[in-house]
Image (cartoon, rainbow, N blue to C red; front, side, top):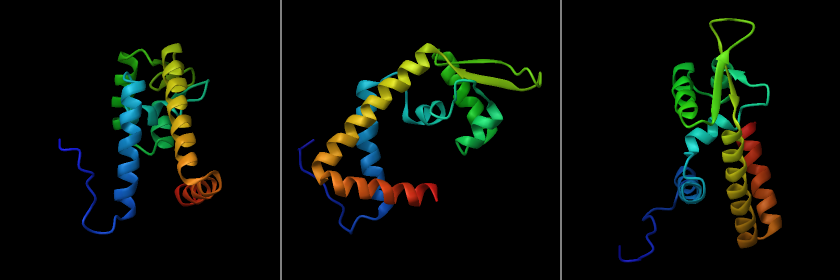
Length: 141
């Protein structure tokens, strides 16, 4: 690589900008929490202490039950979640965080907090606060 900073030829649209920011975040997470991919983090972050069924988790994470089940199997193989039969329905499976899962979430939260601090320092705390508020409003309705 030549080290040339590449910029798009056209004015960057929002998805492109979000993708670039997410790419930087993905690199940081890969370096500091290599045992957890961002897509897996997306699933883990929804799990409360009491756990959720795979169907409930899929709904929270806005995924199909089948897709969520695949992530749960990956996370179980990594030791980040445990899966057990639900008390209310023998057909349902409840997913709960393990100590390893809680540790991975804590390390990820530290990376995300560091990024927040760095970006706030770059653009100024007030601009960052407003950016976050607007993004939350757009993303969460």
